[in-house]
Image 1 (cartoon, rainbow, N blue to C red):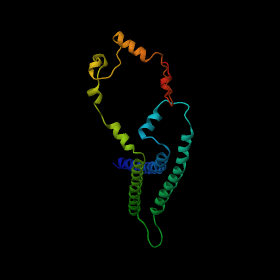
Image 2: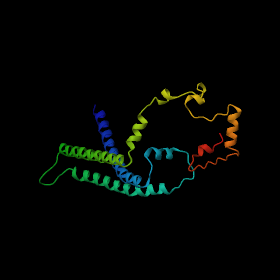
Image 3: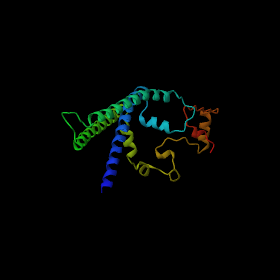
Image 4: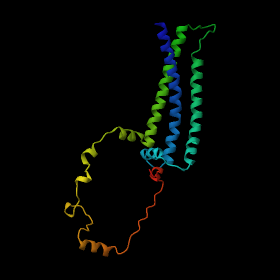
Length: 211
């Protein structure tokens, strides 16, 4: 029983420090990157994610460098905050042995527990505030909700082209050359051949594949 309790305490301490480090770093980075995204990227978050997931080649590395430049000060700030939190814990929860007051082990553990609960709560609030701020800047929750939402629009609205025939009487405007008169009309309206030139910018490299 004591061995299980000891392992549980070790796991709890590891989780505490891991959460503190990760949450402080994430929150410190989210704030400046969200502001940078709002100021420099003029597309929605779903369009940005689609572009990042597309197999593009030869893209400008300037954006990546700017993101790194924006994140580096945030990492430094996060390191300072983590050092302050750990330093305060070591200072405030040390065992007092001066001539006026001597701590017991129980008192030291109780003070350390209170400090860790307070620091954990503050780190959690810091992370939540950063996420709320980020959502205000880039509205990532709409992207999350869109991906979680299911739809049956294709099952309800899909029309098999093999089972449908479009005619002039179907209410859809179509160009018909069923008879010779229609063919002559089309020929007179377009006496020369037309050249359609399509210029594609920022295209995926997938479409260049011959497979």
